Image (cartoon, rainbow, N blue to C red; front, top):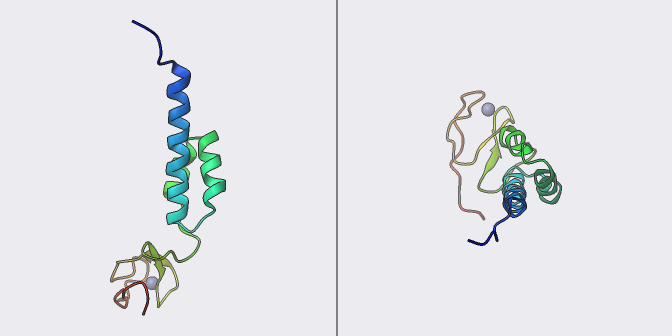
Length: 95
Ligand SMILES: [Zn+2]
């Protein structure tokens, strides 16, 4: 048996995957993709942090602002999770 697969290789793959996931999650939350993917590459536990972070701004298809209280809610939610007011239906991407 040859020892091609080194622990270092696994570590490298893990951090690269963590960086990629961090970048995607940052994009979904309207945050800086490059900064977060680098941070998650260096510190994979930051993935947990960004998972619980709320988005900074509206993200098409992901998050939108409540028309009543202005909090960010999930794109397809019909009732605001903060003030319980009904939300207008989401239209297509361009109206
Ligand atoms: Zn609301």
